[in-house]
Length: 274
Ligand code: A2P
Image (cartoon, rainbow, N blue to C red; front, top):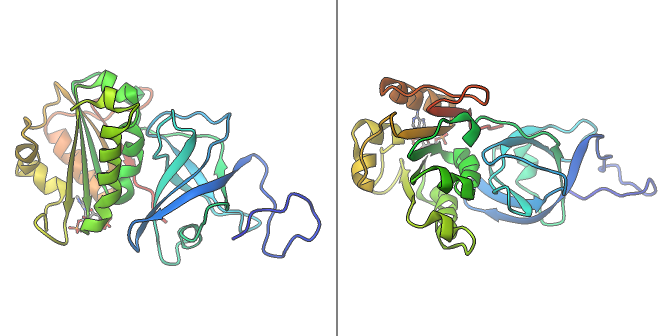
């Protein structure tokens, strides 16, 4: 893929004009974690503002009418670049191309961020649980790097369930970097916990987060009390099936769903895939 020629002369047949009303940003780095997952960073428009946990529509300048897909912004609001964590879907309309991007390439981004995995949609509490599977960790990569998260909560518990061990490396690096980051470490202190399980290999085989909530192992592993709606708040991001199951577990314990216009004790967003 090539970035766009600014002038009309000698434009190759494979190049398309940037559509009106979208940002055209430049990829600054790409990191592949497995043959199914990769992360990339790109420039951030000076005028672009978002709340940690929100998503935007992303596309490529590779067609007259580009295909856009929802992507959670994985970087925090203070970061001068934007970061995304993506699945690679074979023959996925966007990701089969997006997975090939290189630094210097152009990525399109619609201007308006939105989403429910935001502090505004939760009533105040003491512990914040962030439940994710696969790329569902992306919005939480933003939330755990937001100082406001640690101003609002005494403890932040991030969980990620993936099929394979190597798929957990983005989260592991993220948590380690957040704890040691010069800016963030002061806010984070020892408040951030991470529970990762690979369901199809190793010691954690079969340990979906849902199972770990039900049998209590999530809490005994971390040495913390079980879920309590009086003190705890939840954010959930994963597949439809995972969302439904975790919602069921939370509702059974007395949690109530929140929204931007009506904060509650938990919020949900589907991890968007192609
Ligand atoms: P499993 O290996 O038991 O299917 P996927 O790539 O299919 O989205 O799955 C990502 C991770 O989410 C896998 O570890 C998978 O476990 C797990 N998972 C799938 N469905 C659910 C669910 N309903 N609740 C909790 N975890 C789930």
